[in-house]
Length: 132
Image (cartoon, rainbow, N blue to C red; front, side, top):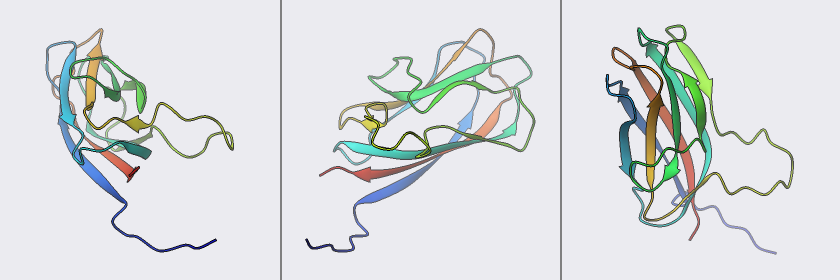
């Protein structure tokens, strides 16, 4: 068995989020590497909460599609300065993982339901590994 250190196999994104009044798609970002990525961690920092009781799903799918692979029903009206942990390695050992695979032609999508996310400001942190 051999091993090598390769610092070019992964990356991280910091995505600025500003909530919109319209319910539904808040935004999406195309896979930045153009190859399948294994998302290994995601965190959301809520800087300024929404005034309404908005929740968000953050996931990996075709553009505009609601998905909660990274965060599901994330409360956007929580306390300012709150960190939320989404997808994280604290799962059952050797469990099958399909939710964290960001396909080469897929988007990271943020969608809301039930209430306006206006006034909400936050940051999404996503850490990933290239699979090729």
